[in-house]
Length: 119
Image (cartoon, rainbow, N blue to C red):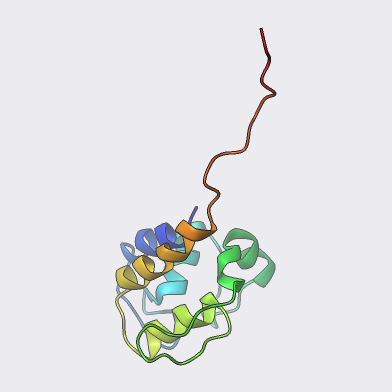
């Protein structure tokens, strides 16, 4: 599952919150993605990073500058949190922004599943 799709899906499960992954049934953009993907995290927002980055490797990719304030961000995951908490972007808008990177990261064609034969 793409992280942009997971953010959109998770956004339908409760209201948006800020500063934490989840609070009172709501989630931030990252929390929405984790919830949609079935990644378990506790009320203290503790989660397994191997599971998160294994599910959404794009989160650990180097991020361009924030599209809102041009502040440099270390990773796409950090920029997602920054856009959610500092600029109060909707989770859907964040998903749209993330989607621009997914389009670049995806291969242009699917790998071959069988060897072609000449007959």
